[in-house]
Length: 127
Image 1 (cartoon, helix red, strand yellow):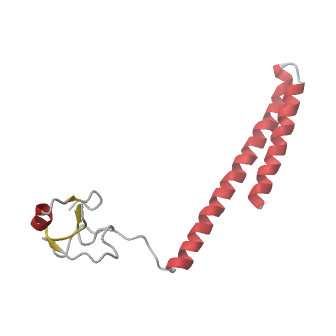
Image 2 (cartoon, rainbow, N blue to C red; image 1 turned 90 degrees about the horizontal axis):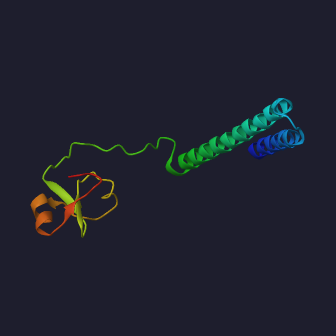
């Protein structure tokens, strides 16, 4: 509600500046009203930034509630425990630590078996 209020106030300030600019005939007399309109646009931008940051905070809080406080994005590892073993789907084969393999019941097998089956390397883990 705060962000909407800030944007509404900025809109009113912008409208007043615009109204005053439209009523004045010369450029020199429009400068002060134009400054008011620019100030209104800056206030609107601040309200939008506030709205965006509150949304990010809400997403962060929800993520922590769902995944736990110590949840961190999974880091890809370069070294593979079994270098010659890969997991495969119908079209692609993957490293065992690839994100595409998580929660799948694919059995690991050698690279040659995947290549004989006509599978191509995964574009994510690049085995």
